[in-house]
Length: 416
Ligand SMILES: *[C@@H]1O[C@H](CO)[C@@H](O)[C@H](O)[C@H]1NC(C)=O
Image 1 (cartoon, rainbow, N blue to C red):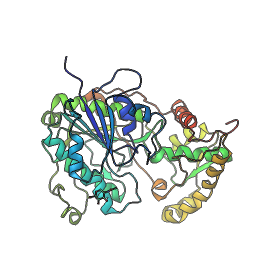
Image 2 (cartoon, helix red, strand yellow):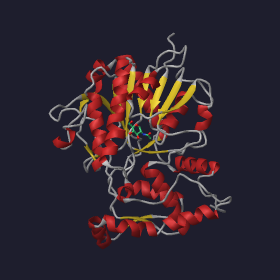
Image 3 (tube, rainbow, N blue to C red):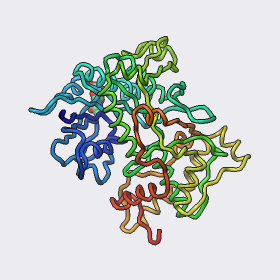
Image 4 (spheres, rainbow, N blue to C red):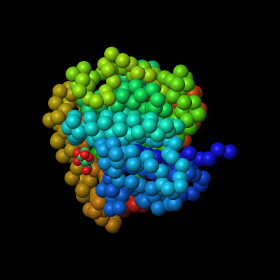
C-alpha cells in the first residue's frame, strides 16, 4: 500500500549504526527502507574508525549512502537532511550520537553529546519527520535490588554520563519532536568492539590463554550488568520507529510517557543553550531494552571465562577492601597481569595480527563497579517487541569470536 519510509542515521558508526544499517538494507532479504543515509564524523574510505568486515558491503549497495559531516555545525546537519535528487524526504531519524569515551573533557562531551543531538532534533522538527528514535547507551546506575522499570528515576552512573541524561531532557522538552527513547543495557555481538563486554571478552580470553583465573574486586557479583545483543538493539530501534510513526508524539506520551528528572548541578545547565530548566520534568516515551539473561557480573563472568577454559573469581575480603578505596592505584597492577600477553597472542597468531580494534587495557571506568538491571517488559507489552537473542550464551559468544577471527581481528592460535 504505502511506500517504504526512508531513513537517516546520525552518529554511532563506532557503536551501533553499522548493525542498524544491516537490518534496514540487508545484503540478502527484503529492505525495510527505500533509501538510507548514514551521517557521522568519521571517514569510511579510508576508514578512520573500525568498520567490521560486513559494513563496507552494506554501504556498496544502491540507495545506501554514507556522508562524513561535522555534526556540531547546524548547516552541515541541515544539508544532510536534503534527500538525493528525485527521492522523498527522510521520514525516520535514528539518533545514535553521543560520546561514549570517558577520556574527553566535559566541554567536549557537552558539544559532542548534548549540542549535536539538539542540532539534529531541531532540524528534524523543521523537516516534520515521522519518527525520531534516540538510542540511550547504558549510562545509568540502578538501585541494588530487583529489576527497574521505566518509571523509576535512575541516575547517571559516571560524571560525564550526566550529559547523556541532559540530552534526553532537552529532546523530551521538544514537544513537536516525534521522539521515542530506547534505553539499552550493555551491548555485545558481532563486530561490536566498544563498551564493557568486548573488553571483558578480550580479557577473559587472555586469562584463558594464561590458564589463570580472571579476578574482579566486586564480589559477590550479584549486581546486574544486563546485556543486549546488537541484533536486538537494531530490532528495537526499528520497532520504536514504526511505533511512534503510527502514533505521533502526543499519543505516544499518553501511552508510554515517563517523566525525566533533573540530576545535574543547576549552575552547570544555566548557560547551556537549549538545556531544560531544572524545575521541569519533561515527558517522553521511554523503553528499556535488555535481554532475558538477567545478566550479573558473577553470571556473565563465569559464562565468558568458562568459554575460554578458565574461571572467574573474586579477590579475597582483604584485597577487596583495599581495592574499593584505591581503585585508581590498582588499575596499573591489574593491567600488568594481562596487557602484555594480549600483544603476545596477537604476534603468535597464524597469521600474526597487525591491527585489531580490540584492546585489553581496562581503565578505571571499565574496572568500576556497574549496576544496571532493567525490566524489559514494557517494550514487549506496549510495542510487542520479541527478542531475537533472549539469552547470552556460549553460542552467541562463539559467533562473536568467530567473526573477529574470520576478519583477522582476533588471534588464531593452534588448538584454541
Ligand atoms: C567541527 O566544527 C566545529 C565548529 O565549527 C569546530 O570547532 C571543530 O573543530 C570541527 N571539527 C572537526 C573535526 O573538523
